[in-house]
Image 1 (tube, rainbow, N blue to C red):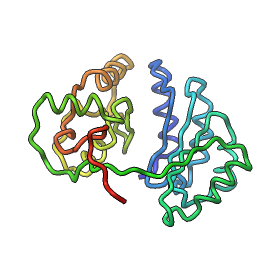
Image 2 (image 1 turned 90 degrees about the vertical axis):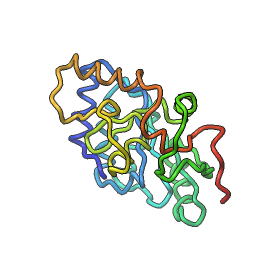
Image 3 (image 1 turned 180 degrees about the vertical axis):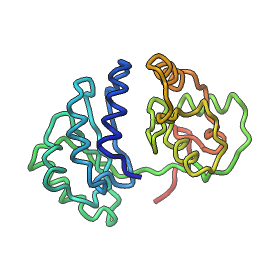
Image 4 (image 1 turned 90 degrees about the horizontal axis):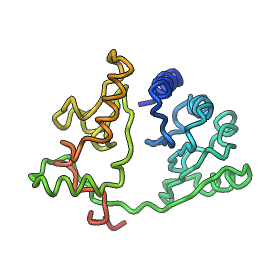
Length: 214
């Protein structure tokens, strides 16, 4: 699913009006550089002064060129390059490109955790609250297909209709809200949940989650 420049502009303008400016915006995938508008999107995001950092999580398969490369030459940008060994076929070339063009970057070898297989697991409320509190993504909001979710796992499983959908666990940004209503919805989504429906289907994403040997 590729987000467009217009979508980004509309959503960021709404946040700006609500004075809910995100300090960091991250692009995940798949691979963000498969989006043909990624350069235009990043260029647009850089106009928002209160966005202090734009992180691009890339798997090192595509080397940015032209506009997609030029927009990265900014201290606001951080390239987070995951090294999947032979699968990241342009990993080394991308590192050299970042060094040559003075693009901030880091590179990591992924450590996979066994977070789950979308199977329902009966859990106590105490366990669910512990999982959510210690989740490594519990301070992010995820935008997917015009809806704002509390976590990426919740976003993708609900988008796939793989788990029950609860209205209070996402915001449909296509709906008509007043500024006050939308601000309240977003603050409630961020601050109120102690755990999500998706937590029943997840093994957790914290220091207790079993690692997968690679």
